[in-house]
Image 1 (cartoon, rainbow, N blue to C red):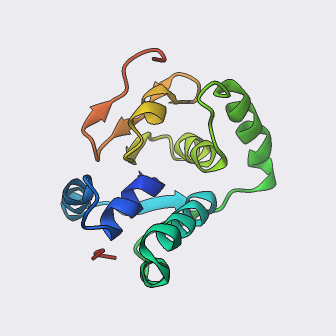
Image 2: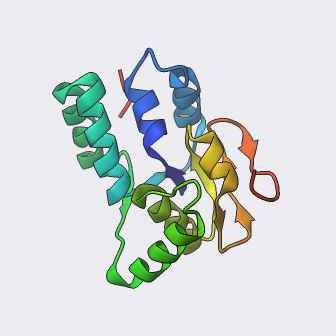
Length: 150
């Protein structure tokens, strides 16, 4: 499974987004399913509504209902790790959606992600030391800190 971040969903939905073509290529070139979290869905719906309107938000939700992505269920057991991550990356800062994706990578044992967030996902480490591999932007994190088809 490949992790999908908010920026990926926004790029798919918006033909004017500078990452739209890359998002389409990544989706069409993948033979694996996508996975994301409820905090990412909340953030995506909020931004789709604000930037593109209710129809874009509804189209996104219909796609999810039809199986475009698997939803990882965060539980109470994940809250301590989310809090620790948000404290660790307070200088960025890390939001709930990003923390949920780090937890997801740790649960999957895989840090492949589709994201337009170059700064944060280059800095974040899952299991405290493993870098994310951004398939959307063709990046592997360096060591250290420094209409939609669905």
